[in-house]
Image (cartoon, rainbow, N blue to C red):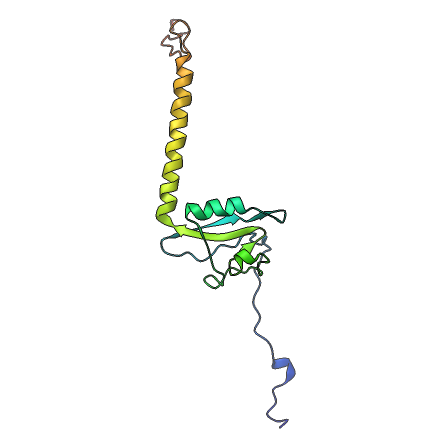
Length: 149
């Protein structure tokens, strides 16, 4: 029986090699991409005070919580909040996903709003323009230094 035994110094566990340089840990891990979906971390609490208004507005906007079983690569501890039992929650933020089309539509909506606000500001500013003292005066005069002789 002793002849079949492997020497103790040859019994080694497989070791995971560490990175060569120190790097700070990712505060919010990135899930593996899913075709046709965008991910976002949604605030569920601040300083241990629940923020149900933010969560409900994001859910109405089309974001849905990601189940921990769908993305095991994202390590997160168990959520103490019973509302998000199977969800991935890290430091008061919950991982959510939505179809990419909704993100594109949302970005276009806010881009159009920002453009309309800028046009309004420009129109209001230019309304104060007076030809006797223009806000933007394009000068077409040229200054020369001597005649060159």
